[in-house]
Image 1 (cartoon, helix red, strand yellow):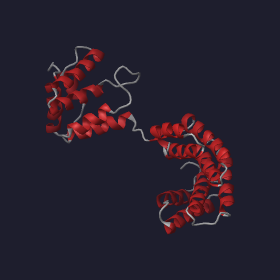
Image 2 (cartoon, one colour):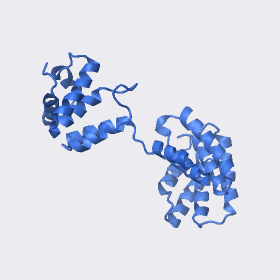
Image 3 (cartoon, helix red, strand yellow):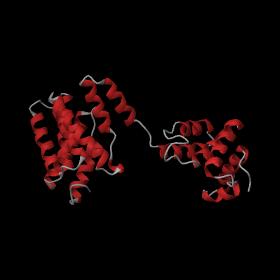
Image 4 (cartoon, helix red, strand yellow):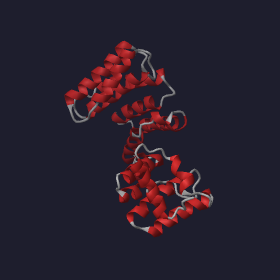
Amino acid sequence: MRGTTNQKAFRAYLDGERLFTIIDRQQMAKSRKKFEEAIKLDDNFARAHGYLAYTITRSVANGWLGEAQLKVAESHARKAVKLDPYDYATYWDLGYCLIGQGRLKQGLAQYDKAMDLYENFTDQLDRKHGLLAEIAEAYVFDGRPQDAIKMLERAKRFPDWYRWNLGWAYYSARDYDAAINELECMRCKPGDEGYVMEVQLLLAAAYAQKGNPTMAKNAIGLFRSAKGRGQSIKSLEGRVKFRNKKDRDHWVDGLRKAGLPQG
């Protein structure tokens, strides 16, 4: 519960997040009320002040609140930054409020602070890519479309291990084309620092099951060159713990068809 030890305040905040919308006026009003409730329960809850500021600014942009409310929003956003100056989210909210007032240069300056904290002072699990998308939108308004494109390309990326896991799921579902697509779309490639060569095993198995022995053998070759020629089905099959024998056999069958020695 970042920013509060009050469980009721935190629950109200989470309810506000769930209710947030830009297409339903009444639901947005309920979202704002939840953030207001969180603040009443704990006035030092920075993210509640920040998100309230954000919802007010969004509501003004949609024509659901009068423009005088933008000053109220800015007041909450600045309080959020003061309460937690090391949280990227508070600068995000302040930047959005300022841009909502037409103060683009000042808003972008707050976004720069948000990005610095996002990249250097934030647990990866707490990073919301919406920040990148909204910075991109501000870049468009600032006449910097190429910067906006780069930021959005980054925002929409899957982490490679998501794709690897998705590849496993597709392989197990016998959708080999989809598995191959996910694995081939990984940003990190063989030879890159940090690349996990075991990805080539799954790629080889998928190609083999699809009926493409050439690509399967190429992938197995890359794996064995990097990990050593002693790699075999016998040395590898126990590393993946399947509950069902048929799933284990399906995995081993793909490796065998790809040309990995038995042992």
